[in-house]
Image 1 (cartoon, rainbow, N blue to C red):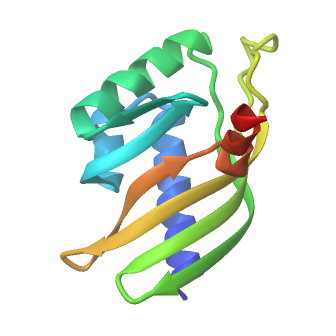
Image 2 (image 1 turned 180 degrees about the vertical axis):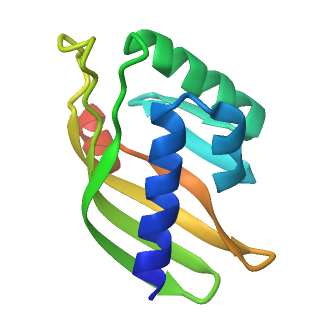
Length: 132
């Protein structure tokens, strides 16, 4: 049940990204959320996350089409770890240095009865590659 709830929330957030409805997108995040923009760059808080998504849309020439594949949700009360196959192709930016298929890790927190994203890391454990 929780897996389906999270899957629906992520699909709705992906749709908001595709449509560049960044104000609506912020409704899916906690106030203190962290977004991994790219390896080595994180932003914190809704204002910074919104600004980052605007820049991301510009970088990908407004053609980003995120979606999710296989997903596992591991929960512990009011916290959930989400492991997801994530696809982030950009039709108008085929030469991006960032991979379009990723193994994302997200952390969701139950806040006032609603599951919100606290950590958005579409790069998942590939962040460890920077330590090699």
